[in-house]
Image 1: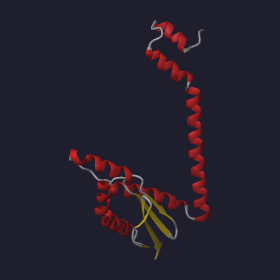
Image 2: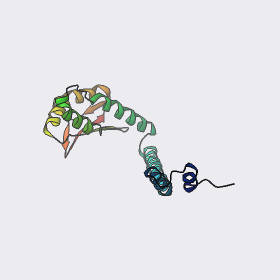
Image 3: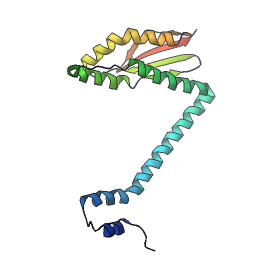
Image 4: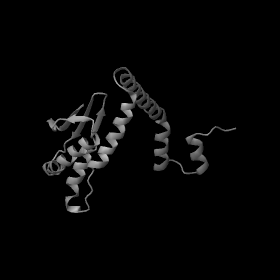
Length: 164
């Protein structure tokens, strides 16, 4: 019984050394490296997740991690803007890219909302117009917390809340 290899497949199909098989050969030869990178990446993600869960168990509640993820996704969905005007599409794209990095961190006694500010002036104007609405949304979704006014820290706008 003959083993399956790239060379045998090329011989069977009579295609010789084409560009397609060059790409296939490259993928086949680099599959060990790709597997190593994949395993390393997944291992790193799992280790970081276990560290976060362990810290939540020790200092906080693991349920707050799920609440943080839920509130982060909900906030990102809320602040995303849609524009059908092709002339202004660029500033909306930059704005949406920046605010897609929004995070909400819920802990037993506090909440921290961090919004990344866009890089250009037009997109920052969009954010400044939406800032009161965003603040109102944060306050209304978390009625058991007192919130500070939004504070800028570099390219991040932060809202801190403490339990009533």
